[in-house]
Image 1 (cartoon, one colour):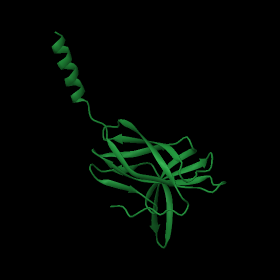
Image 2 (cartoon, one colour):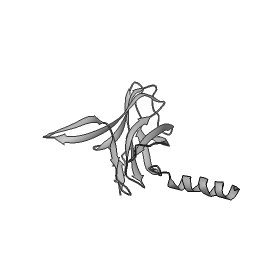
Image 3 (cartoon, one colour):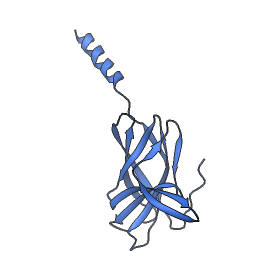
Image 4 (spheres, rainbow, N blue to C red):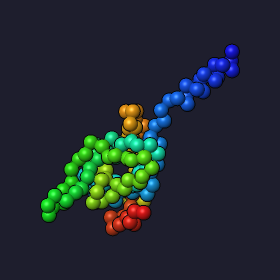
Length: 149
């Protein structure tokens, strides 16, 4: 009887849909000047299964948004987006000039060398959400990220 219950429990776990299983590499935030109220966060995301980044949270900001920069004619425009698609097995680069995370209403200055916690909320194709905790280093004001691979 016990073996049957264990086998049934294991079978039910195996049949549950797996969450996105997102990995994060090379995260960073540029340091801010003392009165700044906005900062950008950048990183590479890779999901084992098709998913999308739908939200980001951080205790250092009053509001966090997903953004995209794109050329409209001769002008570079930044706009908020509802989600960033994460195709299965492909690296998505969140970088200056493309998709990125914007931290608004900063509660304090972000200083070179400190670590900022972010929570990425990823949604899989079935609508299930997963939180991915990331500790993001703050880089100097003059920092430029190396080109993505």
